[in-house]
Length: 215
Image 1: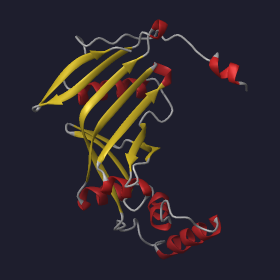
Image 2: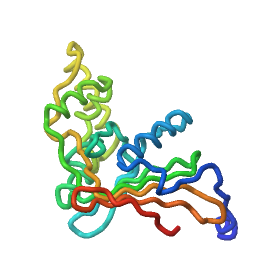
Image 3: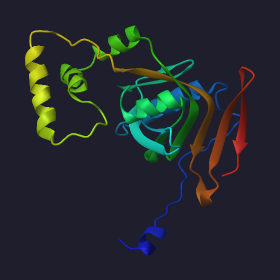
Image 4: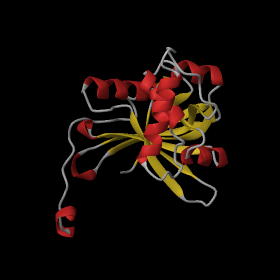
């Protein structure tokens, strides 16, 4: 593929419209609506979202995580607290999340602060996961370099044998959930001629200010 091929890749968006006068006054409810429509559209992994964090060096990093709950005060995902993203959130709890639903020509961007969930909540979710996923969380020291996959698989087999008679594993001390409480959310709808609809919610003194942004 050449540079010219990449430069020529474009398409017009015309599936939907988005107007600041018709969105829900609460951004979390608007997210619920759009996520439900993404699920109904049978999009692959509609709860996948890009998480961006910034570490102590100032270098931003991003990766895809899965949304596991929408609450009135934010969105929840789970991970290894000792992973790179966990360490970066410890340093700077301000994060950004982004959903992309190409099939619906939509994006949602969330800026806010990540807070750890209490252990009881993390344990309840952890033990609701498939047992194989629980073993995997114990077997992997996420983000650490390892000589080969053999070490990982050996550790997995050891844990599988250790807990073969148990219905579930205990919660790892380094694993749990984050609640991202937003202070800004933007909803993007693709439109013709790159005149996209962008509706932004800003938290101001305990309320949400809704405004249209230029594309």
